[in-house]
Length: 380
Ligand SMILES: [Fe+2]
Image (tube, rainbow, N blue to C red; front, side, top):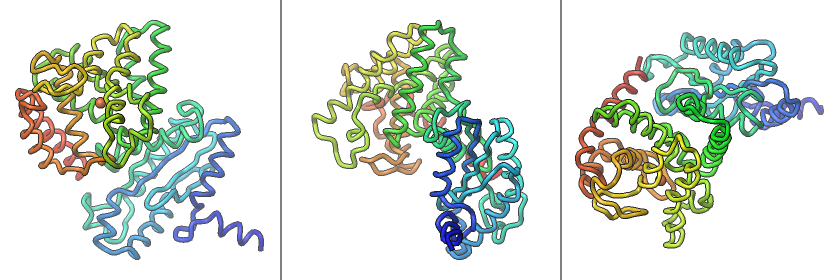
């Protein structure tokens, strides 16, 4: 009898897999041992389209079938869990990231080759999954961190493409390889890495936002013909531009209603605090103007210095337009999301007031190029 009830409380009714609660229990147990553990987070692509097209009962059948395919493609030491909705998790004890990637890839392949009912009418004419991978303790330092890193890797695929496997990689590690940092600077970079993780967990909006800013800022800098060394500075300036938010209270970052004047003043301080955080790292000195001035406006009505026109460093003007575009098109607590055409219209409307008019059309071309590339990837 006990076993019967125990089984009910740890199993997901629909798929028969272990449920989210049991996943958390196992995750706790396995990370407490301190041994190598890899986590795969799987998300069924375009499930909303499938549900809208065929209805929820058919959607449930798809989840059941998918659970079978995943279960049939994991090694003996692995366990599959229904993480929630259309998300699944696989825990692989004693498995390093390289092997975990191979497992993830074989699941992805098996799903994309499996005959699911109704798949012909899906965008890619098949059912696909995206999988984020992370490993403890090699990359992740705790169970929370393991989940967060796998989730970040998954988010990266969801934003750029689908039907992919992605191992968590840190842009801060990439930064380390691009500069010749001394040992004292390395320590500071490590601190910045921690700050970025804190900001990500404090402010849901910055999640994925920084990497998108890096991609768009680099593309715009390239479009207007800037040299490679300046492009590099812009890329890392984009990474660091909001680092000062680590000092802004979470209640202000996530407030759903309009900020009070005093809260707004605190929020505005993030550009100054960010500059102070990065200042001791001398190799990153060229990034400082980007951090300080990314909220200046072309008409001089921005902050913190009210600089006007070309008195605002070009790299900061680039980041302003990129950052604003991403803010318009991403869900934020105090602003409704705009569609891409609406955001483009808004950028044109603010040409010469908020934005450098010479950057507006090149940036719109960049948006279109990146969007088209992503749509292509998605369908192929
Ligand atoms: Fe900012």
